[in-house]
Length: 218
Image (cartoon, rainbow, N blue to C red; front, side, top):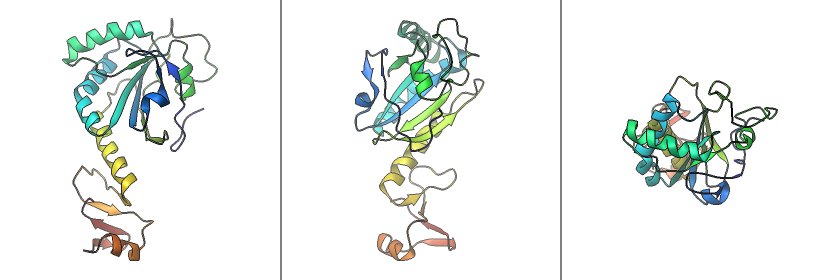
């Protein structure tokens, strides 16, 4: 069954390139990103894992833990990591989950629950639905789901931008407009009345329409 916004992220125990984990324990009170891959040694995913390794300091700065998922064995992940470091110039610096029995992929709605067997013998095309990004909040709830086709590499700068928005709007009663970036003006949330807004923003706001109330980022 597919996950939806606000669902509790399914917990699991798994082997990873950093050793065994319990996902919820590993996440702790942090934000998290889980991004999934249909197969090791695939070209687009190789570039993606390298991109995340390059951006790892940016995720760390935001208090976000990153973890990758692929259905192949951890031993294959370790061999793939060498290729990623060689071709992308950045060594994988976060755990990669092995999901050889497909249990995690099924629990997270990436593969149909009725799929039989394990990862052995399955192709990337068989697993093409295993191409998601999940952002998980400290409350273990799903805050963002992105689904990508196999031929389109993911934009992790955009994922960082969304995390900036999620973290800001979780703390303040604001929303972020189209193409917003850290430090730019925001919109007072529609759930905030004008009377409340006056106490929150005593210097006022710009309102090109009554329902668009623009203020500096808190």
